[in-house]
Image 1 (cartoon, rainbow, N blue to C red):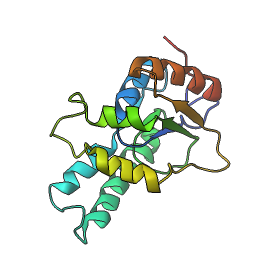
Image 2: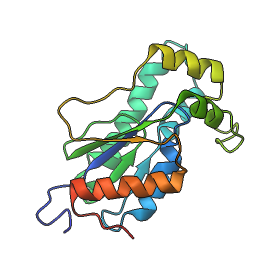
Image 3: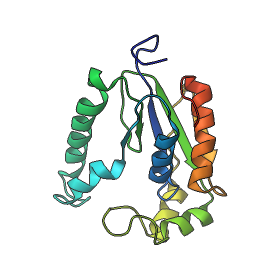
Image 4: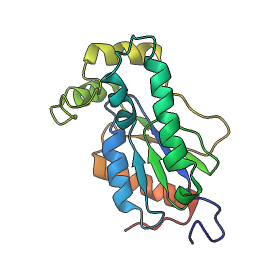
Length: 183
C-alpha cells in the first residue's frame, strides 16, 4: 500500500535515547530494512552542528537558531506534501501532521558510558557527547521524554548490536504501521 492510496501519509518515526544509545546507527540500519516509504533520515546533529559553528551552546542566540533550523528542515522535508509519501526517521524532536511513531532506546549506564567513549562514535567532526561524567550527571537528573497516549516502541539495546536492534525494530514498526515489509 502506498501513501497515495489508503494511507494519507507515511509516519514520522522518532528515535529517542540518551547520547550513545545508537540512535543514528540504528536509524541508518532501519532505513535499509524498510522496503516501502522511501525513507528519509533527519539526524539531530545535522541540524545542531551548523548552529554550533556560529554560536556556542551558552550563547543567547543558540536556542533560537536551533529552532529556526529545525523549522526550516521541517517545512521543507516533513510538512511539504511532496514528502508525505516518504517515511521520515529522525533523531530530533519534530512535529507533524501525519502518523507519529516514537521509539525509545534504553541502555544500561555502564554500557552507555562504554559506547560514548568508543572511538567509533563519530570522532571530532560532530558535537556528539563523549564525556562519561556529563552523561552520568545527565542520566542522574533526567528521564527520556515520552509521549503519552501514543503507541510507541521501547527497546533495551544494552546487549544488542546495532544490526540486531534495527531488525527488532523493523519487526515492531511493521506490526504497528502494517505496510512495511522486512527484507
